[in-house]
Image (cartoon, rainbow, N blue to C red; front, side, top):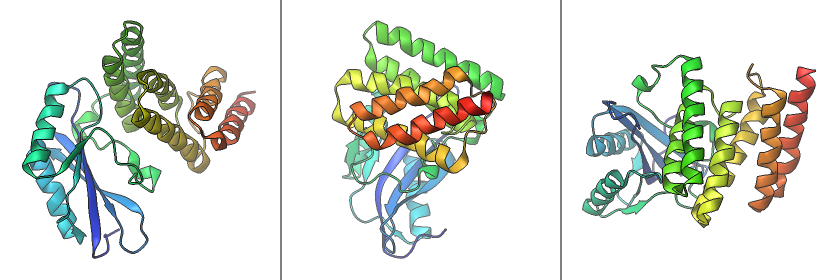
Length: 259
């Protein structure tokens, strides 16, 4: 849907593949719709570098009547790639923008369906089974890094796993539930308020996705259903008791469907 005139660009989030041999990157621009106040996104793919990604997003915004004259927050999600983060910060400084590792508070995308990580088309080069294997390996790598107290490296592994899981299986899948469970624990271990907010948002998106799409995924099992109950309990620790009932209900529905 075309953005209405006078909608305002708020932030740009860059998505740079973890594969060192990847040739392209992508990004998305979050804007506030002047008509309804919702936060929506515009996405570009197959970009060769950071400046090209930003410029393509700005051009796409103008084509969709989204104002880009106000300062924008440039976002590179938190992981261990410090050199990339520093380069992104320098790009933000050049443009007199803010730099952040998280989407600013109260500027999250209104429709969770658009939260899916924007990736270059070439990322879909794995079979579903190979993607699942890679996701599990990244979660195991994260566990080992966590045990070694290298939380930033663990977050990097889990972000990569989440990126793959959303690309291949979406939010309403056991692969995503497993990865988000591990990411929630790791975020909590950092003691960062921003990280805990992001953890809660991910749990919310799983709940919303199950509500809208259901759990029609052949990989849900009695064991993976318990992940939803675990996420429900974590949501209480993150000060949102409203997710306890729906997530517990979904877990019970999955069990009933398997009996």
